[in-house]
Amino acid sequence: RADAVGGLQVDAFAAADNDVDAADNHRGEFISVDPRGNVSLGVTGGGLITSVGASFDLARFTVTALAPTDGVVVDLTIPASFSIDSAIGDGAPCAVNAGSVSCTFGSLASGATRGVDVRLRANQAGTFTISGAARAADDADLGNNAASQSVTVEGSGSGGGGGGGGGGGATDPAGLLLLLLAPALARRRRAVA
Image 1 (tube, rainbow, N blue to C red):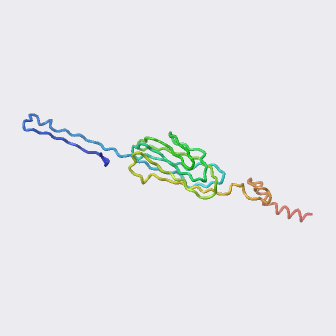
Image 2: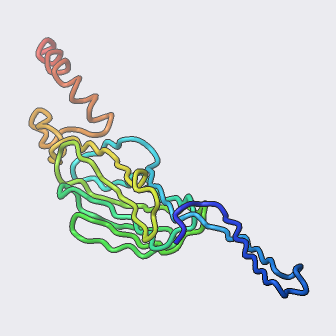
Image 3: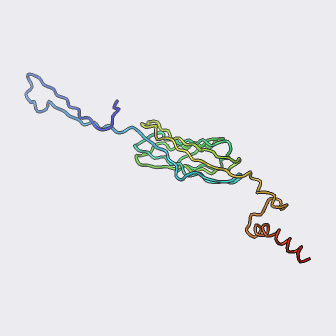
């Protein structure tokens, strides 16, 4: 078993007192030792801000093979405050369960990169962390296998405040302008009458 990357020259010699041809008494072989597998996990983009009830796409989690690697899997842990709408891996099946996504990529050549795209729905306000971990059958460096993304969910999902009796508030600019001008228009009407 080889535990180091590189190569090894192996030479064998044979000799005998009655050997008539000493030129064929040597055999040498170079044995190349390939690196063990190594994957790293990253996430593109920073934290996200969304609102309760909204569907949104997480920033992409990306696994990269730094050496030929077998049995590559990316697991994401999703807090209970979210519903998972979909999960898609580049050329990989993804299993979706309550609170988790697991995408199986299998073997990756050195330099290969694969991504995981997840769409969530926010069910509760707060700040949450989506954690990702890459694993492989022959990973030589476990220190680069984790990544995470912060998601801030704002609001209660009720559609806004009372809006002066308007039942949910205005969301379009014209309605907001009318709400802001209503007290001034009411004062002007009283002054004219």
